[in-house]
Length: 587
Image (cartoon, rainbow, N blue to C red):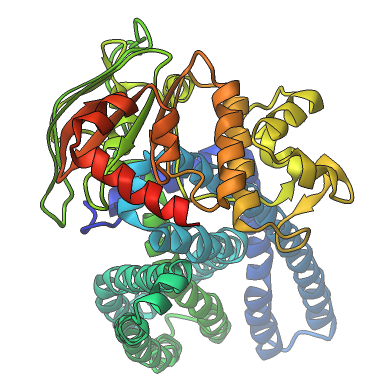
């Protein structure tokens, strides 16, 4: 099943079934053990009604007290055995569920990390967040609680129904016929439930997306006075979510009452038929009593099964959304992994347009030589950031090529790409953990000396040394908070540790104050000497220090040359420089 616009795929029924079987096979011994224990517990539970029927027949035949005492003692023993076996079965089943849930979570994380950045951005954080939290939690509840209980109840129900057939096939057939209304109600419900729960999950993702984007852009919302618009968007998303939830609630309010009123039909039918057969001398009273008790006992696991079936529809929809990540687009060039011949970057005839907008790049040609420091400047909306994304292999050009060492950047394996080109943007993230943990992400084998060298390179060593535990200081909500500039310096330190041959800075120092930004850029330039640096310039002193400057205007590369040459030329760059230099001088 394909995804809707901007959303990740959802697995179809067949794929969900195959995934469920794969999970069962992954811990097959535990599943088989749970199945055997449930069967033994159900078998122990069958003795009670049958012995009651025997007692009835013995009493009617005038046998003594011993005919009652011995079966009663055996009933007690069987009930105790059923209790212990059922408890053991649930224990094994819950352990199976926990281990399986751990595999589901691990697979989900692996699949998310394997998604191309462009796919993640188009999907939005809301959908990924909803799938990784609410959907995985629902699947976990099913594996831990619903699955084992459903297994127990199903085995018990099958054994009880088989026991009725063993007493008298006609009584068994009539009892089974009495379940027809339940089957019809279940069929009506199952035809509608999956789509209803999938719609509910999609609506939940949309709510999460709206809330996440509004929170992330709170300052922008306030600056542009978009509060009413965002509130309206939130209300629309919540209203859509409310409608989907009311739809699934309606299905439950029809299904469960219809089922509840039919539970007594098989019991009543068997008693009426059994009385008629007994009057004809074709069946004994004990058999009729035992069959009625079996069917009465059958309603309890049946009720639990139907309850679990309803929960399975919700969890099946959640599992379809979780498993859908396996169908998400992957950047796979096929064949043997391509290896760049050198570090040269070539952009030839590149055009690019976003899905919901016009063309952003219009025939860009550019060559970046190994070891060169290139600054890309231009007004907002000129296509600078889009060009940086293509250079980093995040997006593919709509037309033309972007290559490194003769190999399309977007075709490189992720591990190879990270050693070739790294993009650092204004967006930054401090991971939960210590300063050391945040840095080792880039290079797990780095020593503390390497970490301090990277921090020194980006001018962050002073404030890190001032922390209570230095590199061992816990960061994040439960530890020491970091401001925007500190978080950005940590991101730049990770880049130093990653040690790529080409570094793309998309206004990566925009959140630093001018003095810190200039110090950081100079330090990075010293550390990355001999490597290629492409800087999307926010402050023009970056362009002044570069080997060459590329000027972007309206999606085109209009000027390319050194800072001095472009200033002398008196073109667009000269105008930008005079404007910026005048403002800088005024400060």
